[in-house]
Image (cartoon, rainbow, N blue to C red; front, side, top):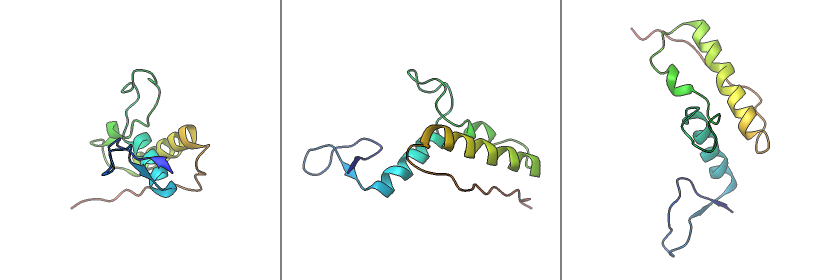
Length: 94
């Protein structure tokens, strides 16, 4: 068992635990939704994905996002998972 994220106390008054699949999902969320510089003790941790939220929509931006996500996951979680592929598509919202 692994510690659940975000940290919380369970009904028994102990540190909440979670299964392996949920723990890996929590790790992925931490990497993708943390901006570099956000963590004091690990200033280079994160993906920078949130900075792209309002960027112009284009196939080039989709490709850049794909490489950004894949690179961040490989850099920070290579001991826990193997990234086989990341698929990002650009769609017009009209």
